[in-house]
Length: 406
Ligand code: SOE
Image 1 (tube, rainbow, N blue to C red):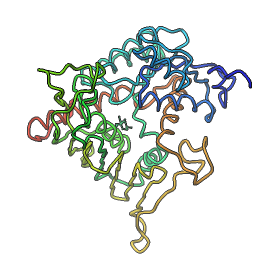
Image 2: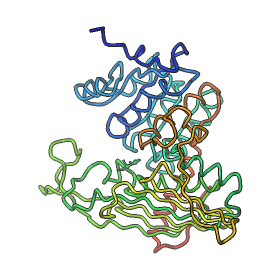
Image 3: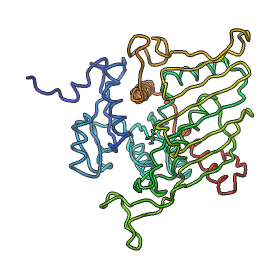
Image 4: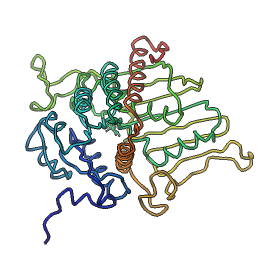
């Protein structure tokens, strides 16, 4: 039985022999696990200019983060993110924490000379996002890059859709219709986790799911939303406190329940700079819908539709075809010349949710090596944050149309 490979050796693969790129990740829950999978595989399947090395993972609980390091493949464990961003073996800081720590960690990591990947939404407020975007702008002058983790841009089918829109296959855009539906809060007894508190999450379904669909709609349309009219709702306003200190909340007045201080659902319409119209729905109460993201674009010359539950497929209607033969057809996005597919399986074998994190890591590594700004940038993340803020402002004013501040 040979000695277990050191993470450095274990990372060899297709990027073997390339100069290392040390990654340090803060947070190791769902997104930390998804990002870890991306960092573990990217150097094995893509021919990269730098060899990603999982140098260290950070979390507050020493025992838990050590166990996470072993489980997720990180060489070291830290309990203070300030120590992590100071490590000589860390070139990239990957922020996978709740939104209330994104700004502090990202600004400090950029000041420490690191590249930064930050999970979405960029921040909990526009002010925080502005500070992050400014820090990224200044860091870019020093050759550092910063990216936001809107991973649904990196599904091969959505990347193909973006190319088709940019090639003019839809012609002048008229509509974007997008929904992101989950149902994990339908149970009134689901506890009051960090995602349900404004001070930790910034907002509820709006920032968690709405951020994804605002970014994806703007990315595919190739233009920004310039104004919104919105409704938000919190259906269940009190939930059981988590047992122990994990909730970080004390039972007010001896009650074992606490107030939900974010939205459960957001419904909004939007106008693009070109005049095209959009409709958005983000909810955690769509009973039976587990992680259902669907988007459709309608243009003068055609339409495109994508469904995350069928993420290897893209539906395309070529409106220039004679009516007798026209109709939506399914493009199976698994050909070698489709985005990212050169690294994976033969046609028809399909990819999954986790591959978007490998593609995200690939694009970041190439950007770092090329000295180019990866997309989406912190400026893109700030623009999404401004749309989210306008949604909340509109909803507070009975859905009055609210322009997006630039
Ligand atoms: C919410 O449950 C969530 O985990 C989001 O936070 C992620 O961004 C999304 O990809 C899956 O759903």
